[in-house]
Length: 196
Image (cartoon, rainbow, N blue to C red; front, top):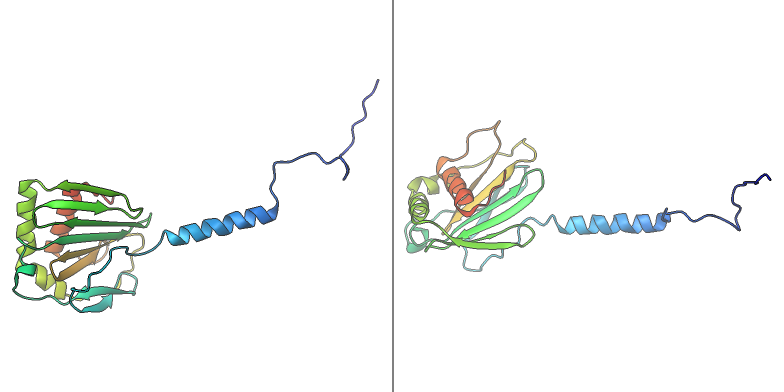
């Protein structure tokens, strides 16, 4: 006996695992919307007691906020100033913030909102205090920066009291400001916030 095989007709279509195009389109649109929400630049709220902010060209020509440095006063003193490091960029588009209180207590928050806390070792707190009080830091904050041509590099912004400085970690350009770079390296190492 011979079995006849034939292709399915409209009445007897066999089921497939393929989804209709409308479902695929909705899925793609939802994915794009979710990924767009993940690219917000800075989630750190600002307080109204901060000094006036001006803008300077950033790594891609976009303005970056810079705060005019002030002289004197307890707030700019390294021993009594809060230190904040914001790092962003890289291939994966990271965005981390580390805040160190004057007593050495630190909080690290990543782009997803995960929070870690700790306390700096006495030696690290001493080094941080010395770097924060270094007069070269205020001079570095007054330096102008030019836009970078580097892609997928990290941008670091350090705030010590009312002084804000930073740099783009681009190996093919001018070296970063030394005190600012030392602060960044110290905070990344001491808090376990590694960006590479």
